[in-house]
Length: 360
Image (tube, rainbow, N blue to C red; front, side):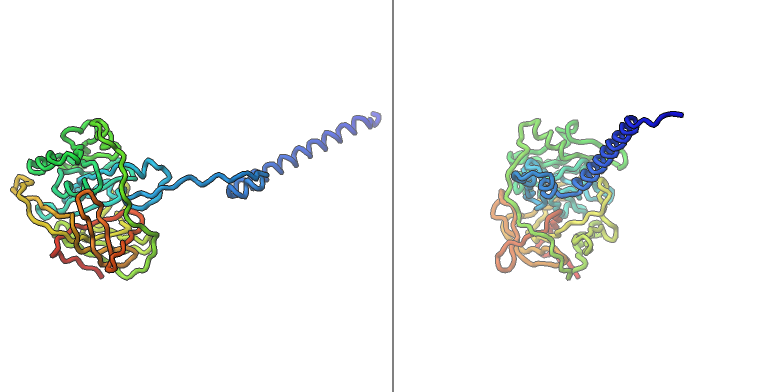
């Protein structure tokens, strides 16, 4: 028979007590760590015994052209790019338009429209199909101090560009290897693509600045008050533009006729927060734009004129104003106060002063 050893029993007891203490401490530490991770920064700092100054939140900057908030100062000061985008039926669906700050649409020739998509704060990995520059781009590029991106231009537009040295033209003819490529899912000429980073690389290669300061448009937060459900801008049978108000996102779903206008790159329906119908003087120019002998359109985007602004499910009738070609267009209501836009993508439908859009 073994004798009871009190010293050995006492030693085992202390080992057991120490193990229990360790387990309890580990459980308490794990619980505190979980709780700490669920707290906001201020509560967590106080619980941990920190009483020093709370670090400020990261700085925020407003994009001058679409009013959205970015935390990167460089993004808010990027020089805008105007990309001439095809809108012939064979070019649809376009890529990258949902990433733009502002998109202008206007009649070109042959009963089709073209887009002038302006990118500033937001990058687009693919934009297109890219087509040749039009006279409207010579109005928009100086307005936004922008770099122009296109596939080239007719002799008449090229002559105008060469006499306008303040418009850097990073086109496919001189910068294909830097900024452009052709896809195999479309038929030429509707398959030329570019990217915002590629265009900026092209501009840098010729010593053009890729940063700029722009005065901001007026912006506000969403305040939906639906009264308008549809907008119709009947440019032609090939370019019948329709919008439907989407209450869930307080935006305007865009359609080609009855077909949803999708962004082929992003895989989403294009849905601007603001739709602007801007009435401007227009005329057929003396510049021949295609082999069929069609003449390009010329638009006067300086001065003042009538404007319709659709936002928050409502329509506001007002006046647009752009005193000179270096000014950014501003919008005013009947009392001459600026009309603030909702933050996000804006589509500007350029139409003649006699044009008849409709809404309901």
